[in-house]
Length: 183
Image 1: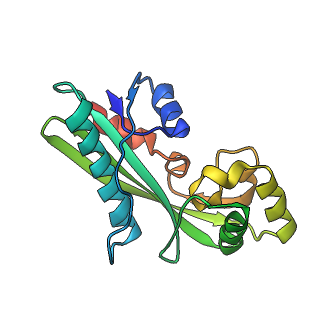
Image 2 (image 1 turned 60 degrees about the vertical axis):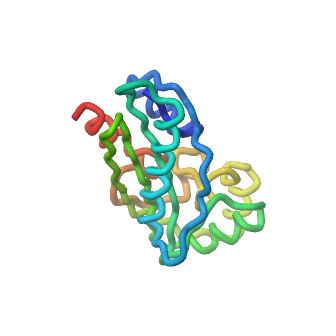
């Protein structure tokens, strides 16, 4: 099988689930289309990644798994922070609020293509400026959508509660992916 992602978290989740996937990231334009909502965006991107990698690299019958994860607060996409100030801005916006983490997943095997979106609600504790500064200083938020990683040593301390799949927030709803691969 092929994992069309270079995300260390997705690679680890697939390996922990017993898959020895070839890692071949897709190079696609990830710009949202005019009027495209966040959930439609992640599904479209996952489908585009799977399709590109399947066409260029998959052997006959070899499944390709692709995913894309976004963080959305009140309909606004929060991508990876550009710098520390951007990370602070995102964390201040998330402080004390519930936001959505959505992962679009696509599994392509030959002519069979299946995609879905998994959505998890994540609620942050109310954060002080000092807590935000301390977290940003760790460097942990710098390569993560929404400027945090729930699985991180420090990021997990920001989250008051989640409603949905924890692994979706990490970047791949692995149980749902495995069930669809077996099906």
